[in-house]
Image (cartoon, each protein chain N blue to C red):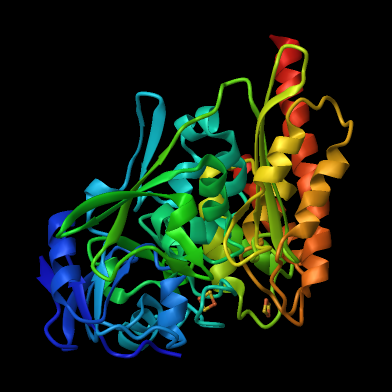
Length: 291
Length: 165
Ligand code: FES
Ligand code: FES
């Protein structure tokens, strides 16, 4: 299992990388390599030109800009795991990152790489969907922003044009008192999850849900925001009817394969969603009681 | 900007186990293949070649990485440590000794990778408990030991390092 031959490019600046991507036929960019390298080794991908982004320092950062947190596409998953900004402002992302692969793969794997690979069961795309993250796509022609909802077009298919590269991701943190929870089911810790659920919940002073974000990963071809379920959650308190809200997960168009038929994925989705809502609610309530 | 001319050989100088090593490889050569076939450091094993088994784990700038998921060219300018670089002159590291004492291996295929991961873990968390050890080991497959003796060896290495003056 060895990659097919390619020409390797190692630019040091974003401008050089975009220039290469624009001028070379059948080129791919290589981020952390935790998904693309297996595909190259198995020859599921055989680009003629491989543009290694690992020498471009300007693409790796986590910073606060006004009421947003901006993450560079080449930020390592490990750096997200150990980031104070992420821990304090994006607790959903922090809980999810610990479930991404293993320590050995998080050391190199990047946030942008995970988003562009867009595996249906990957955690980071699900988190971005939960936040309605805004992605910056750059090419030699210029830059454009795309919401996660339109970036994720289908099964492992993004809105990126061949000459475009994802360079940064913007998320708007929720109120510091919100509760977040990311839960998944995998056969072994660190394996691809069969399904996952992300919940963020804000409460009003009477501990009723005033704002909610509910997302499923691994269930459909792309991460799935459950807007109806979110609406149904507003105004609820405690665990009254949370399980009923989780039933919305049973209505989605779930992936089907011999190992995990769609009825099984839907059942798993209902259970995980109920669990995520429950945990996010408890966390928000605990904070409200303390305050 | 560095570009390899049409799939030609690349001449690399890599820092492996503290030594500057020269190798001439194709751009598509993985770090694992370069270590094994060019530098003859065959202690780094290849199980799956797609990032799942952990046998090929090495340290790159002190952090674990799957060497089957890195190109040799990407290691230029980094410090690479392999299993051959763990012990000094014939002396076993406490971790290696613990594996010996606790029978932490049978066939030994997974062992080099496991030791690199535990080297990183015990450096970052010298007091790692069983949970932390099991979590770090979740990135490795071992088909022989059932993991119990690996965990026992790691715990006894923690103990040994703690008692070291
Ligand atoms: S050979 Fe690299 S992880 Fe299996
Ligand atoms: S000792 Fe044989 S695979 Fe682990």
